[in-house]
Length: 518
Image (cartoon, rainbow, N blue to C red; front, side, top):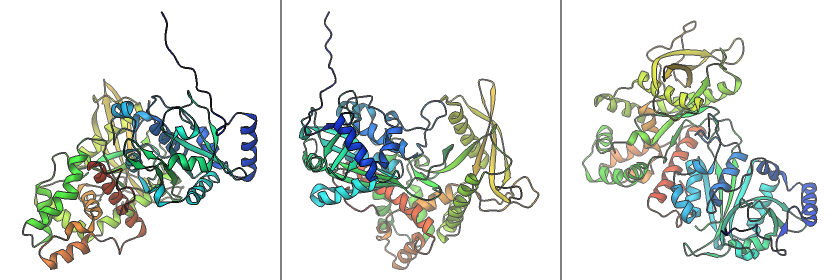
């Protein structure tokens, strides 16, 4: 019986030049000497081919995220944290992507889910000179990378829309290196930059819009062995500039769209809340909070989360490492900033009035079970936490001072026990010589998470409040203008996530990517 199959395609040259050909090698040598291949080495270290013909966007994004050492915040296999195509599923189901591919707008949404700051431009809003500057900037650095989506037909290749990272640049020949993620079909190849621009400057038939390029910056702070700790509160553009901020990790809050409930929650926050506060008579901040809380979606606790860091018990040392201490200080600082706001006082008072209680034991048990799953690599739900205790751990060095709360848990599955330690920031110091924090210790909770989320809502959310004095007061309460740069960045990060998720919820990600995310 005959079996139909396809051989690898022959690369049409010109216009493309095979990377492994004599001419391709010479271009590479010239570019290395000129310093425009620095980004290539980190990309090639993490390079992978796509696992499905329509996964070029997901494969390209996986390569770049791993090359930048961005924390996936999810386990891949076993206990390993690693980006894989199968994990990039929060903005579009993998089944749909497998059948139809992914739009660039959805790919940008995926970047936002990973904590990206995105700027997008159509080719009609940019120039080839701008594009060349970005190519050069990424080629001389390992800190940023580019993904291009282009019409393959311009290079006399089969198929049309395709995504691949740009691996380098030859200044002498004005050529870009395309690291094709469809390696079963075409090898890496050099193409004239002008022709690559023409391949992007085409109409995408699936959207009817012109292609172009997108610049986005990753602001997610990598946290080794961390998990998301849940509480009451949670295109046509065809080139991406992806980089990572030069700062210590410190992100405390983040939004999640990995659960389908995010669609209704985003709609509630962006549409229903402004309507509710403007349509009902509210004359105090507490009444505003009551109106907002009264109609909360039942699964709101899946949306906003804060990060607790796992410590392997067998590897844990009696003192914090220098890296752990640096992260904890930043988290404590951000938590303190939220706790010192007047809005936090109102939120805490209101939650107390409606009988909401913070339960550290329950939250700790849940998080320890999550931590055990991450460390063991088993996704089973048959975990329960037999006991937890809260203690302190000292800072880096022999004379370190107390810096962090440690939640120690004993997790049981199938009769076997596993110890899990979680580092949790606290705004209250420990009494010297005491092992345990006092009951007054303040750790991340529903009150501060909801406070941060209220601050992240667009300022116009409160414009409809009829009582002008109260409207002015509410605007002042949610303002971050008087706080630190870090707190401003934290709130701005949440606001950008909300705006992008709202665009995805309205299916406008292909239309509005050029609009500001602030």
